[in-house]
Image 1 (cartoon, rainbow, N blue to C red):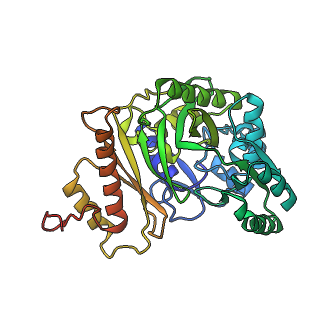
Image 2 (cartoon, rainbow, N blue to C red):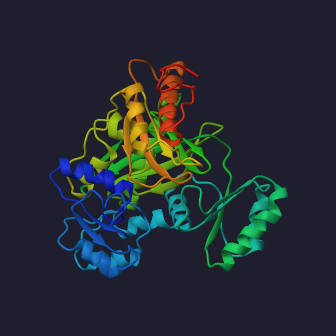
Image 3 (cartoon, one colour):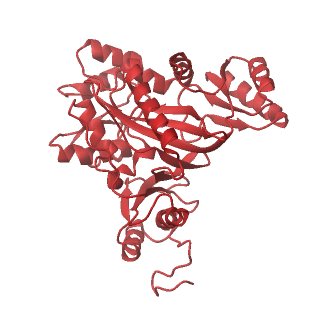
Length: 400
């Protein structure tokens, strides 16, 4: 697996159960996956020789991020390496503009968009959209980076300044219509080289400052028809692009009840972390099954609702150690499933996540949904901040 981050670390857990050894190409010896797998190659994902060293003797080469140059991957394929997903698919996760053109060609729902090569290009597009637009770098942006949202013509000067700065720095830019949306959804699927596909229930993702903060699985109050449409759309995209492995199709549910594709991720994804405890087969096991061409696993959920909450670094790291925070969380919430990535704490950094698998109840009951979500967010906030959102005193057992 190219990349030594938390996705590789969690994939390694499932490789063990399948009797496999996961070799990782890691930028340093202290990255999350490099600390747990016995087979580490140190080097950069942009270095062809490092990629060759990682691929030597491997049954398959896969990724925990999309940033490997496809020209390097094409060389590896020509040399007989089993690269999954293949470079001709991965390019659509790397290049947002190419992805938009391809999806539109397929007839998939996408926002209006345009390439931006000058301030004049921006103004022409934004004027037509009443300045309700999203500016993006074509490559490299994630978790809110490389994304600028503008709401009306009063943002013109700020937008022009961003375009000038980014183009001068050599960035490639695009602009999109800002979609009037009700919420964000994610359709997580997997596909094998044989062409078998599998999909998990469509989930709702809650974004804060451009980052996924919470995932509700399955998405509450989502009609059966729209859920099926999202799953079939994601499976069709995976098939037509030739994806192998797990893939997330991030979607907007519009205010008038339609779907619009936002982003693609051809790897395990934050919106699929709930599957580690809330589904019969996790996204990480499924990814391995797919790239090794095993039959895919059962994706059925294990509860009416599972909520994942990201543990994000606080503005000021608590004095209490993470070990002690975990101790107190387990004492209060023994059912909380904690997944920590062994990453240093800094503001807004993803350092782990918590899954709460709901008990008896119905996804149709707003009070049930709210209660499960509150517990997940309370647990994650405690691990981030060392503070209980409800005022609980972990020593006395009372609310302050």
